[in-house]
Image 1 (tube, rainbow, N blue to C red):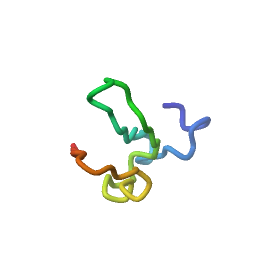
Image 2 (cartoon, rainbow, N blue to C red):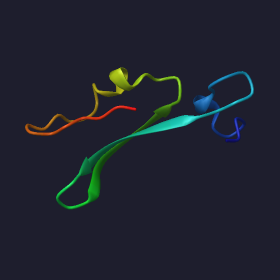
Image 3 (cartoon, one colour):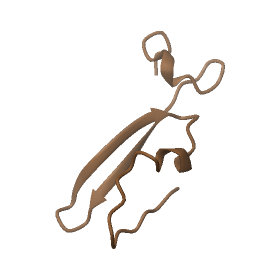
Image 4 (cartoon, rainbow, N blue to C red):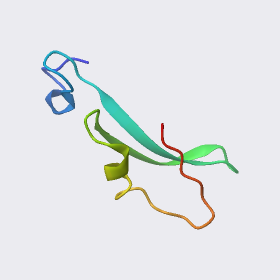
Length: 61
């Protein structure tokens, strides 16, 4: 990533990175929600913006 353009994605001194948190509907096989953060953001903190649905499974890597 070009840190001159994507300054918000700074991960280390000379590296940048992003995470895409995705909610995927298995029945339709279509992603229904995206949330893009810098690589420094922990997955647990992204759960605040991901909509929770009854009967859903959430997998973190």
